[in-house]
Image (cartoon, rainbow, N blue to C red; front, side):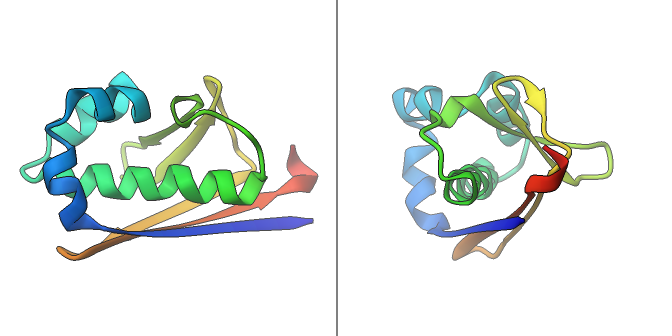
Length: 113
């Protein structure tokens, strides 16, 4: 069985949110925050990672907390999904963005869980 999830967000919304420490610390892990803040326009990366987390939630239909899902970029830039600290090789994730929108698509292969 294959499950999918997708999410799209307005990047502009994150332009003001990424400076809100409470919001950032509730949603993102330290690794995610460090990665995004290292970018010249952090809010774009925050929007993309937020989309990926939402897409994972939609695909797994689970009541996970946002910080229980971590989106980490590999050395090649590929988004890797961790749930509760464990890398999920059965979950594939793609993130894309423009200056207006960020989108993420997730595929979960249930046979490989």
